[in-house]
Amino acid sequence: MTFGEADESSFMHNVGATEATSFKVMERALELGITFWDTANIYGQDGLSEKIIGNWFASSGKRDEVILATKFRFRMHDGPNGAGASRGHIMNAIEGSLRRLQTDRIDLYQIHMQDSSVAEEETLRALDDLVKQGKVRYIGLSNYTAYRMVESLWTSKSLSLEPFVAAQMQYSLLCRDIEREHIPYAKKCGLGILPWSPLASGFLSGKYRENDEPPAGSRLATWSDRRKAFDTSQNWAIIEVVRAVAKEIDATPSAVALAWLLSKPIVSSVIIGARTIAQLEENAAAVTLTIPDALLQRLEEVSKPHIGYPYDFIARVEG
Ligand SMILES: NC(=O)c1ccc[n+]([C@@H]2O[C@H](COP(=O)([O-])OP(=O)(O)OC[C@H]3O[C@@H](n4cnc5c(N)ncnc54)[C@H](OP(=O)(O)O)[C@@H]3O)[C@@H](O)[C@H]2O)c1
Image (cartoon, rainbow, N blue to C red; front, side, top):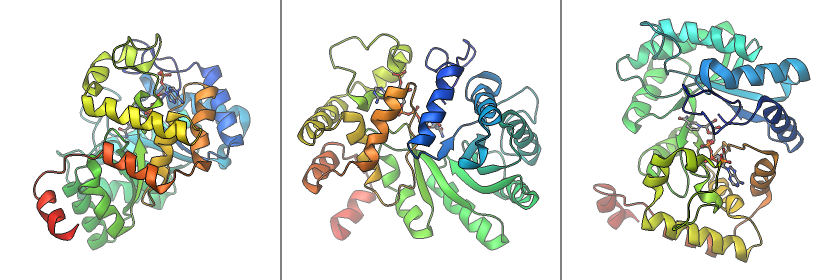
């Protein structure tokens, strides 16, 4: 999502990297062993992120070294087939992504958010066709309610259609909502969790301070609404514990926040957003970082979400 310098029409305006830096990030990522790459047709304007990745594949010849994931669902052009999860949009969207990415198949094709106006069966039948045609290897979901996720997996099973194998969901020390429903169900049915915004847009890097202005040029300096939403006493308490844990084990706050996610077996891969080589290298250090159990417990405690009814009722009895 951080690839490309999008114009004012895109939500990624002023928070992305140049094409040259994006190329260096991809090169360095492969050297570090990072082989799962995620993008989406709407990142940057007019598929800019996909175009940059496609340009890099064409110049490097390294397409086959990457497990490539992209997404469809949000609006790409005007008209009834310009967005959504209908057969019409999916068949258009895949061709656009393949063309921009300069490849003949997508390894993981994800629906970016549930489309409540389209029957899940229609979406699954279209995606199943793409797998049969060889244009897509596996399918994944993103930003689904738990009830829709269950409905989807049951529909695939009963109709013998390709099932979603991964759920790309917001998950971090600041946002643990999916622990109520999505994760217990994912564990039961073998769905992998791919956390997005694992550093809460950089907040968990520790570079933001409660009473200071955000660093110039940072994402949360540009996305002021999101910064305001993060400005809660619990979030600042989380940051303090992340900093303290980092100090104790001689790591950076970013690596600690990412290693907390990696410590969870249900997490298949953490989708980091690196805008520079320095950020990429700092974040990749999480892979070899083991946080001792007592410190993991401190992170769990300070970031504990309010679980609400009926989860609290069940937890009192079952633990
Ligand atoms: N499915 C979805 O709906 C959805 C939604 C969002 C994202 N995603 C996916 O998830 C990926 C990651 O999301 P994200 O970009 O929000 O992840 P993130 O890791 O929470 O935030 C990334 C941003 O944080 C800052 N940052 C990263 N590492 C840092 C470090 N070590 N030190 C200081 N600052 C650091 C950088 O911003 P600055 O340098 O600009 O401050 C960077 O652009 C995206 O690229 C996209 O593929 C999916």
